[in-house]
Length: 212
Image: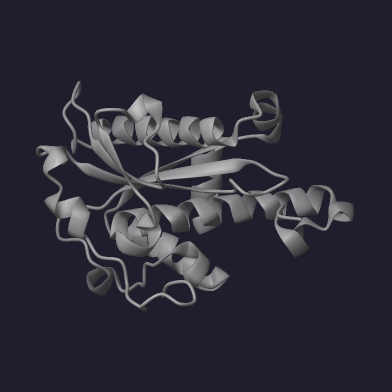
């Protein structure tokens, strides 16, 4: 079920690291940032930026008011600090507990043509947010013509999100919605890499996930 959900989205479009103080990300900036001005707050992150093969995936997610890991019965943390099974379970739990999310992917050809991974990352992030906004309008969460406010992992706000986003370095370790986005992007990319492995087993993508 999770694989079908993520492949559909992609085509249509824990703890901390060693040395850090262990804690789960919380809904601090999301619920209290003054810049949102009442707009729905979206978490945004990517997977595949540092890879040498495969597509780059970006995910955008909106968690409904009152959403919590306890209520959903799942742990949400930086995707790198969860096992494959934990990430898969987290995506299923997010989908079944009222969260809305979308995934955007940019393939190797566009990445090679652009030769600017930061630009590619920001384009994918903006596309994921745009797709999620359309979904939120369809679901009645967002009024048509209105927009959202995004919390973006990293130290730069994508140009297409200027005025409606805030960057947060290490956000996938601090903010719940960004951590959730990191998990969704990672699971979507892992599914794509497993498909690539089945199509071209000689590249042994299953061993390195495109990171060499």
